[in-house]
Amino acid sequence: MPAMLAPFVIYFATARSIVSIWNSSETFTHGYIILPISLWLIWRERGRLAPLTPAPWWPALPVLAACGFGWLLASLGDVQVVRQYAFVAMIPVAAVAVLGLRLSWQLAFPLTFLLFAVPFGDAFIDPLINLTANFTVAAVELTGIPILRQGNNFSLPSGDWSVVEACSGVRYLISSVTLGCLYAYLTYRSWQRRLLFVLVSIAVPILANGLRAFMIVMIGHFSGMQLAVGVDHLIYGWLFFGLVMFLMFWIGSFWREDTPAPASPAPHTAEGARVVPAQTRRIAGAAVAAIACMALWPAYGYYIERTGAKQEQANLSGFQPRWEEGTPFTRWQPYFQKPNAELTHFFRKGNQQAGLTLLYYRNQDDDSELINTQNRLVSDEDPNWRRISSTTRQEMLNGRSLAMREAQLQGASGKLLVWQWYWVDGGFIVSDYAGKLLQAKVRLLQQSDDGASLMIYAPVDEDVEKTRASLRDFLAEHLAPLEQVLAANRQARP
Image (cartoon, rainbow, N blue to C red; front, side):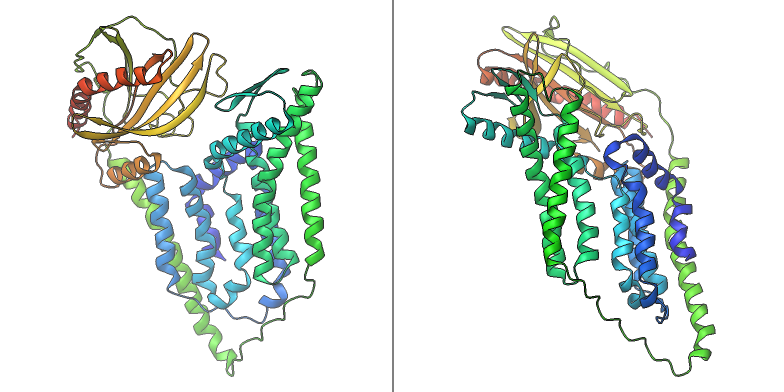
């Protein structure tokens, strides 16, 4: 028991971060009931557990150490969700190490069910938004009602609609999968039926959310935009979702398996009384070893943080542009956490123009982080700008390939084409995941955590290819000067 409670003490800050998200996000408030449910599931198994004797399984200790190392890498790379999963995963792994395979197998689902306490789902928001928009537009087109789409925004003759984060259905999906796994465990005995029901609990909320969005658009359209455009929008959605969940569980009940699985026979010990003291010593030894495996990594992480020198503000004044200074053509600004240093300029060369924004991050922490889910080109709450398309592309510049993200933004003054990419560990990348891994690597090796987000942009007229050509020409002449000023700041650090 102490080994399974130890993670809550050793990784208290991580546990607190989970609860903090439960408090701040309605999407994850279900996290409060996960631990009580897990404890109740363990209590249900008390009859099966009573005759079993703990037998520590030492091969679980390397797995426990791997969880700790994963937590350390996630901490150094500031990947909160991985840090939280590593913390929660230590609980069932510690149980295997101390209690053994036989006893832990009886608790496999109650212990792994704890993973649902981790607030995870943000990675699905954008794909679900796109899927919901695709479904809704296709369904409206089938009715014959004219519809015009721009990205995740679309217009009907009666009014305009936008699929935003709250419409993605991620809340429905998380709730459905959590309940679906619990229902499958309690209702079925065969793994085939359990797996099938879990798959259904994934597919149904995605389809239901598309139908919900279509239903709300239709209600709004036929009511002249008087209904389903305010609070009732949410009420209709949750009522529909509740009905869908009820039907899913009701239909699933027709294939329920009520007969409990036969209890495994208790292992026979001829000299049980003599075994107890030795077994107790083994359990205590396994518990101490498990706690040591878990405690090592926060201690090493603390050592890295203490020995890392804090540096002063970066200096970007060494950037030498090759185009002449131009007049600002937009008021758009990216929605990023506060950088250590920032550079924003507008340039022109003949009929071509381009804007440059360079956000430089140093001594990164939770409030000033290069790669963060809060960092976006446009905030969802921005009343002046919205993103209408996004993709990734490769550009050949002076014989080298550069990957970047391309987005088109729509504002009151027109469209803007934006190219954006990262500079991490002395090189250019576009992937958030690769960037986080590189950040973890340099911090683990106690090197510079300096990084930057680079954005170049230009207004879009009739021909987007003409705008791309302007950005390509600007970048071909300025990629080297940008690399020089970035490298100069990184090399200035000890």
